[in-house]
Length: 230
Image (cartoon, rainbow, N blue to C red; front, side, top):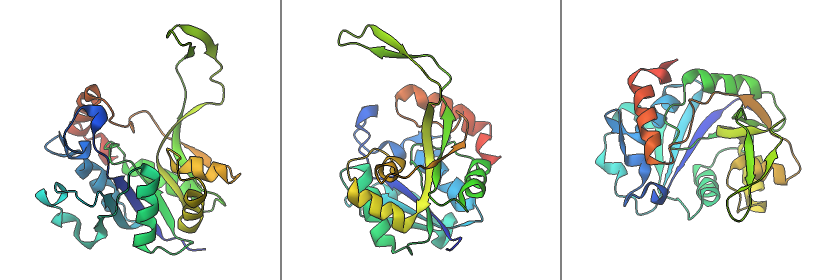
């Protein structure tokens, strides 16, 4: 088993939920494209060897920005698919990682990831037999809606966690899992479908995913105040 760590960022989405005509990772945030902040955190981490960005084959926005400050550690791959799982699978195959290499799959739209969170994930999982993911225990009361969008019942939140990224697994295991479960919405789900149990590594709510326009305002405030440098 090796202790080689690589990051893979699926970034082939269309940005439709934000009502955009271009991928949301290129929205300007604190003076840079949103994905720049994600790339910066991952490239700056001393234990990550290479950061692969999986782009749509027809992506014309990436080259409009200057990525030279990240050197060869940043590798764009124009092999994105129609789904997240397909993009991750394509990225794994083209990057030609060794089966035992660790790969950290991270959302392009989680720009507030910190160095501390990455280090915590690596420390917690480097000797784990399965791998795992950053996550946060559910704190809010959960309501189950009926077909009329009225409360059908209150769900027990005991033991429930909000999944985040990075999600960290051995490249060979993750490739095998995605081949068997190509329709999952995150990597941990594919691993779970194999009967394995990824470890939940405690994170915090600041590592949120920018999904709706109002999320941009919070991310802007966090980035302007330097929350990603700790």
